[in-house]
Amino acid sequence: MSNLLSNNKIGYSFFWGGSSNLLKLSEEPFKNNIEELFNQEQFYFEKSQFRINPVFQIGGPTMAGSGFKKFTFGIFLFFSTAVVEEELSEFYRSSVRPSLLNFYSQMMQKSKKEILFEYRNMILYNEFDVMIVVRLRTKNYKEFEEKINMMTEIHSRALIWLRKNGKQGPIHEYLIEDDKVNILPNIFQNLKEIDSHDLKNDLKLIKKTRIIPASQSLKV
Picture 1 (tube, one colour):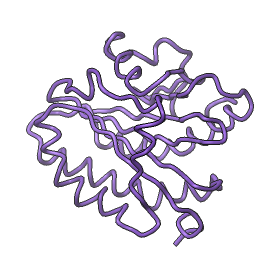
Picture 2: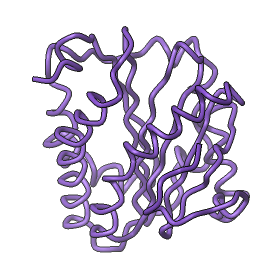
Picture 3: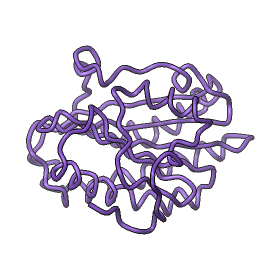
């Protein structure tokens, strides 16, 4: 067991969005993979942040259901003490990544239609009062399998940028899609604003910022 799990009491929660059909279709894969991952004594289900922190305001197009072909899933993590970035990356690589791949694969097997699958990696940093959100969106399982390996690197680079430049807003968001990722964070006030922005801009959020190939590291 890593030091991350041994030395921290880790809060967690989840984020879903999509049609009722897709939400129902996700129940069994979620139970068999994601729920099992957090069934350890080091984890506790965090509810208070959703009542007291306005950044967790959700709703709008994604949460209400945006069509059978689009499904969004995210994991929130909350840490009671400072976390070593290398340990966090190892936790995602060794535990979160295989669970997510199985989750997505089983959903694809159950679905009779192509799914636009989006995963959100969301960590709230109390020291900055900022949530870093890294999103990966694709219809292709092989692409998801490849790009999910980059999410921890992008998150680490985003954290370096935050330490260097300071808080620009409650949410610093990065989106990986079509082999592109924004260099600078998109700034949002809450989670609902992200989904409203996606809808308003016809799912072309990253075109509003300078882009680089996602295979390259973010500049800081």
